Length: 396
Length: 102
Image 1 (cartoon, chains in turn red, cyan):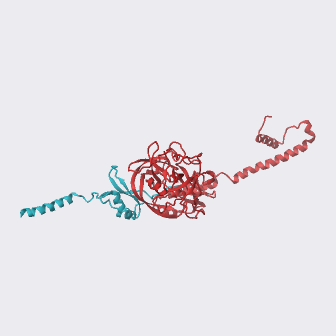
Image 2: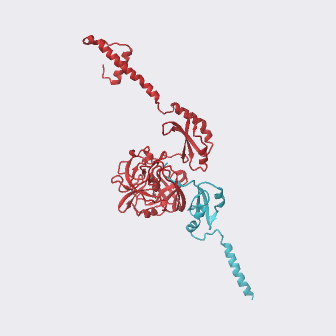
Image 3: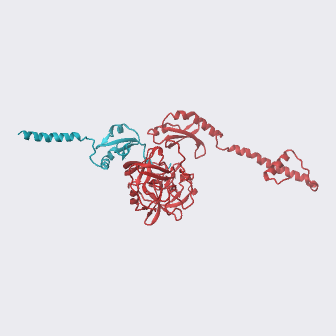
């Protein structure tokens, strides 16, 4: 007999058992054969019983794939309602998934920019024949052209080996509330009083100002992580701490949306290199109409566009925590407008990205990106940000 | 005596002619000052989310651009075609919002 693995041996034994077998015992064992035979039979029966339980346990917890009865029921509901619901322009689509309790549910995607979205949501049923109906507000869907991981195959969402480059996913380690986790982009590196800080937005690092859905608020010293919670299944322990929050309280009172994190020694490239951009200049420049610009961010990676407007007065509404209620509406003045057709330059998750002139070597910083729509992106002039912080760009 | 009548008449004719040649749409002050003077009243129009300085499709003529989160009757009615001689262009941008996730 060859060298069989445990399963092969067991299989052979069971087959023999079923055949009430068969191997003749060697002569020296014959005197005790009935005892050994009984022992083997008992063990075999026990193993057979254990094995026979496996199919039952598998049947009790089948995988949640398209063949799962509850998923099939949810798909049937989806087939029944989708065409009708999508006659409303506000409904962008539906999908079948599972909720937080692993129960199959129907998700309805609603255009977050639709003026009538609230009424459409109110008219949706909470469930259809026992299948829960969940609503998700979203931008209009579109082809993604190879992003969000960057045009050059560079991931802007992956856990990096430190010291990290910027232009990557990141955020406040506790940015989890109301069934969502939030995050943005760790955009660039600045120097304040000779010390290095990661620069991002107020609303990425420190906009949780109510206990609300997570029982906490953003506090000085809280970890700033890479990647952000959104890219580690909302589990901070799957990310790495690259900085500690130093709040700047830029909003609602000032004209910039910025915040900082003190760099944890050894965790961030001290030359301030940005993914797919590389090192930048320590100098800045003012924006001008039709100026070519680029940025490196969490969601859309490295993207290029041009300045389409200057001196913008813009109203932007902020939440009081991740997916929370309205905290305030801020009217900014003197902002930079960038062409953003189809959110191809800037999209959700890119907040905090540094906008630089579109040159290949050590580009100068132009703006701090923080807001937009599917047609326009908005940046704070970088000089206003640096002036507010008393900072300079870390660069060549 | 005839000169006394003709001279004031010529002056009046010159002034009227000059006024007629100066269209009311000619810009009179810097566009940044115009924007600063009107941005708040434009933002107060329901549906307006922003105002900025841009250029027309020729990529060189300065204009004021009004960003609309959504069309409203007030926006259709109250946003002028020009302000102090500068063209006003309305863009349907959707709401401008912070761009963190989700």
